Length: 251
Image (cartoon, rainbow, N blue to C red; front, side):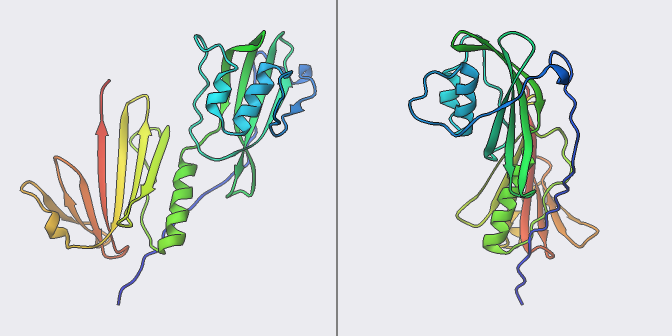
């Protein structure tokens, strides 16, 4: 009897309190202004408002128009969740605004703080962006891909719970053979951790090379270890072949 496996994913959410110190003091912050959805023909807005509206419509190229391009780079947002709302808060410092953005979180069924930036304006441009808080979590994109795969194929594939480095980026896709590929990256190390899970089509023995070694894990999983390449799993419990590859490169 063929048994299709089922993805198992546990997501733990928690409420947190954030205290931002430095140039912004709570008692000195003026009433915040919510940034509405973008409207055509709005040219009277300041650069911080224009930047916020561009972020709301996920237009990073448009957002770049409102920063001093030779000196300022828009911080990377390491998550693909949609930005559901942005607020601009006046700072006691002249020409400085605080931008607070929220993700629409489909798991929590509500908003989640995405990031807080301090924006310094000069004329019609933003001349400085300082990151006060970065709440983007690339593993949210992993969870979304896993849920989509689970819903479509009704299979169970194990996903990593510990990593050799901090994950700053995630990429993943499903190919035409119903294989799931997950790539976890760390930009600072220029390294990546790749996991590929595929429905079993041939016996694990077909993959064995000259220097490969078989191992039997405690849960009955038969593993093929390639010292010079990857780690392969042929799991009877999940019904999938899983390949792991770890590589770190120096710049």
